[in-house]
View 1 (tube, rainbow, N blue to C red):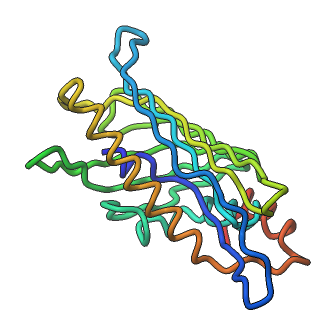
View 2 (cartoon, rainbow, N blue to C red):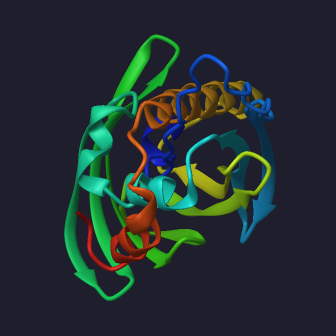
Length: 209
């Protein structure tokens, strides 16, 4: 389930170091926590995940806002497409598969992404197979490496039955799987030319390449 819902955003490209160059600064490993919380009479799953990459902030932003390409690297996502854009608000439709033990279920979501260029993306549910879904991606530059720290937080509850404690473990596993796949993809992305990094990154906030 979360492998579909954690769908929107993340990116980075890591520069290669040849002979005679200093090795990269070691980055913090992926961290993921999932808890059940009660809000508005609903038992929600609260998710927090973070990881760091060697990619520059503009490269990360460009990748995370290229929504139409998400199915190429996000596990169990069948399609992701932009339905409309109005300034910094984007309506996105997603189709994917949620897997629970020996069962699988098709998932359809329409969400609104509100972009703050080079900084954050807030996601809100418009319609689909969720009782509740809200999320936020934050991007923080890392001066020591020239890379970016990516932070995800959100609350969700599907509109179909999910077992309590077992559901928490399943969602945590899905978050780790999705984030790992996305970060690995971002590591392979080419960096933007230095002279145009900032300009291209800001353009990505109002119009995808």
